[in-house]
Length: 185
Image (cartoon, rainbow, N blue to C red):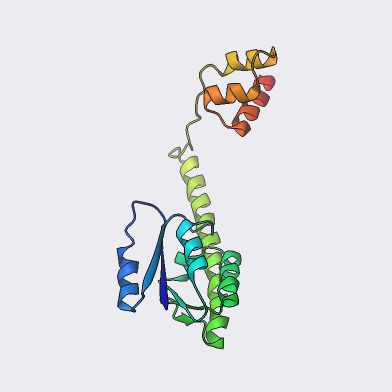
């Protein structure tokens, strides 16, 4: 059975182009995720990995739609190999039913990860240039009205830190960072 996997990064993006390509290839079942590729914890990817059986063929538009890191990609490929499932990436023209396809798959996964690292570096450089030009200040700090009062109540043992965090809608990390900051003032 030909099984397709489609991923777009956000709910606003349209997966239709990838779905049409899979339809043209005669794919019988398609799994679609609208989530970042930075993790393999995607609901439809998990369903697809559970669904595939021996001799099935998983087809994707490109490796980057399947996994973003070489490690994640190779782990997913290992799971497919254990089930004797073939993998085809249309963009990279890779077919794991051949030994050269399996070799190229490993090379492309490493290149995809390298490109992702380059993209992050370019993004950091761009932010630094914008910051120096005064055009980027980063995220505005979130204010927590009532923090000092609740911190005082916590110090007196009237409320727990968990209660204060809940009332403020604050994470544990933020709470303790702000507690440290208040001691330094």
